Amino acid sequence: METLNSIFDSLLYPFKVPFLASSQIYWLYVLSTIVLATILYILGLTNRDKEKNLLEYLLPKEIYLHPASITLYKYFFLISFFQILLVVPTIVFLEKFANIANQILIQITGTNAPLIITSHQLEQKIIFSIFVALLGDFANFLYHYLAHKVPVLWEFHKVHHSAEVITPLTVYRIHPIEMLLGNATIAIITSLGTGIWMYFFGTEMKEILIYGVSFEIFIFYLAGYNLRHSHIWLAYPQWISHIFISPAQHQIHHSVDPKHYDKNFGYIFGFWDWIFGSLYVPSNYEKLNFGLLISDGESNFLNSVSNLLLHPFRAIWQRISKNLV
Image (cartoon, rainbow, N blue to C red; front, side):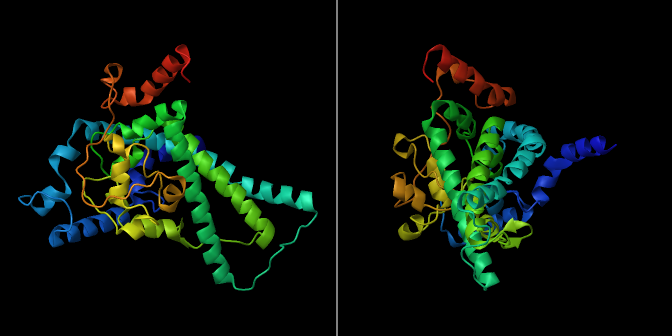
């Protein structure tokens, strides 16, 4: 009976996603994005056809009824099942690495008490939360960078970049293997860093959470995160764009223009790209086209669920056959 209940819960998971604060498409994040987009529309601060009304501006048919979008609606249910059945349990398991790293350091040094003790618990929580956010964001940046530079990883990452139009659901246009590898990379690096932190400051360290989500992620998602996968241009001032990745900068990352290739890998913070030379800050609005420059052998790659799943394996096999891996 317990197994049947677990299977039933998994089948319902895609319908629960909009009500989970850990999801990028949590209803509150989507609502805040709509409010922000509406303000941009009213103030005329973004790119738009002057003849479009607000609804046409927010939900253009040519984007939300595009074949790539229709495919993504189907694909969303499949990738959600994979996430709840395999990725979530894997992350929970890998989070144990924090205790392992802490114990290894204790064994090496022979010290089992915090080396640094502070009494301001709220201050500790804030600093620890920021530390975890920086660590997780760097891990995200690192995997994203490798996904573009390592041929085998790129074949899986191409699934995300194959979208000819982008919407908030594009965050789920990701191959199951990449979802597993990316989340595992972030979980391992964050857990190891947390273990080191525990060694110095003790095991009582806790993040500040809002609805079960770290406060910095909650704020980030609430502050118009979903505009990054949208048709709505929102760029930050130059100096802010060196610190935080704007929606426009991430849209540039999806651009097919060669000058935009391998730019803006960052998730939250832009200074990783700044440090590693991959930052691109637009000075003005740029009209973008999304997707991939598709070769003849990939003509059906974009808008088929089966091809989104199987094409990376075919491409990798071709690379192996040609010794291109």
